[in-house]
Amino acid sequence: MAVCTVYSPHSLKSTCPIPNTSRIQLGSHQKQVIFFTRRKGGNYRSNKLSGTITCEANTIVIGLAADSGCGKSTFMRRLTSVFGGAASPPKGGNPDSNTLISDTTTVICLDDYHSLDRYGRKEQGVTALDPKANNFDLMYEQVKALKQGIAVEKPIYNHVTGILDSPELIQPPKILVIEGLHPMYDSRVRDLLDFSIYLDISNEVKFAWKIQRDMAERGHSLESIKASIESRKPDFDAFIDPQKQYADAVIEVLPTQLIPDDNEGKVLRVKLVMKEGVKYFSPSYLFDEGSTIDWIPCGRKLTCSYPGIKFSYGPDSYYSNEVSVLEMDGQFDKLDELIYVESHLSNLSTKFYGEVTQQMLSLSNFPGSTNGTGLFQTIVGMKIRDLYEQIIAEKKGSSLQAAKM
Ligand SMILES: Nc1ncnc2c1ncn2[C@@H]1O[C@H](COP(=O)(O)OP(=O)(O)OP(=O)(O)O)[C@@H](O)[C@H]1O
Ligand SMILES: O=C(CO)[C@H](O)[C@H](O)COP(=O)(O)O
Image 1 (tube, helix red, strand yellow):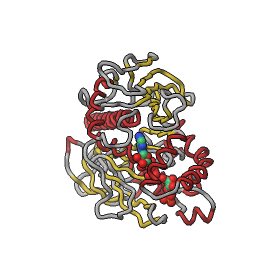
Image 2 (tube, protein in one colour):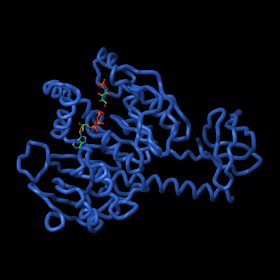
Image 3 (cartoon, helix red, strand yellow):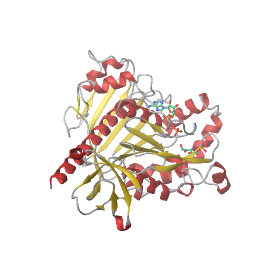
Image 4 (cartoon, protein in one colour):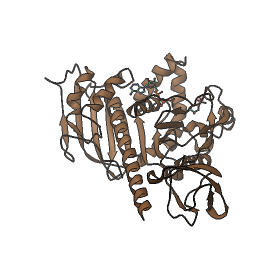
């Protein structure tokens, strides 16, 4: 439902597209439901009122980019949990839908915009990472419509059959997350994003995660997993990886530096790269904003077994952008002791003391809960909630202001 404000009772003009007949909720000073019928030249006729209408669609759009098997679904489940409630596929819809809906968020998977299905890609010898296999015009049109408060009929790419199924109806949510291979590839789609995240998983770690999932859950052989990663690599380097330069936050996952020549890949070094100067987003920091700090918290208040834990924080530059980087190498032994670390982090956008620890404890069975992946995904979740609340508060403020004029 688009939220609109009616200014003057005489002229009728809209600054945004409204479907032919639409239910419009007026500003809070004048709550009533009215119907609009579209007329020529962007004018609308209503059953109850006339006036100039400014549509303030309240959908904010978040982009999450990563290669397949790099933890997007896990991150999405953490994000949904920050807003409370669980996410599920559209009720009564296609059981193979990739969409997840909760009270606040709708997560759509950009695989649904594959223009070539599995057979088409095979025939043309292209991977799903190649822009030629994706319909960016439709992606742009539909994300734009949802952001404007208009429902869309989005295609479904069926990962079971490898073909495109009939579309599903997606209503504009409060927060729309577009996750997948290319949320920041097309500049038109990129410009619609209120915030963007890139999960940058190093090759060694990606390989370990993929083996764990695809061998255990999908019955693939080690050789076929290796071959699949190798065959995707050129397109990954050409089309997916470059998107990280546009991200407002990057979560980089690397092998640990605490164990010399580690090749087990169980202990991880994770960096949270946060762009400076992004509207509604102010980076979190350790101890003292802008300083450069190394911190080993192990000791009386934090239990650490081998190889321990090391945090670092400081300013840096990333693709010529000024950033702050928070880093954690190692893993927690006792998750409830995370409160000790949390109390030394600032600007977390939490609602109460210890909220990050509480979130992490409540999802302790999720992958990455004992290391920086879970911690930084949770912090980014808090930041997205804060961004959303700031944008909505600002919009409400300007509607009230306009209504008074
Ligand atoms: N932080 C983490 N630490 C360890 N393993 C992880 C982490 N995040 C994800 N994984 C593992 O990696 C695999 C892929 O994770 P997930 O399904 O979240 O990725 P995805 O990007 O959504 O994948 P796809 O796009 O292929 O559906 C899973 O087996 C999961 O357990
Ligand atoms: O990279 C991917 C996105 O996660 C998939 O490989 C792509 O969507 C094609 O899917 P499938 O392998 O099921 O045909």
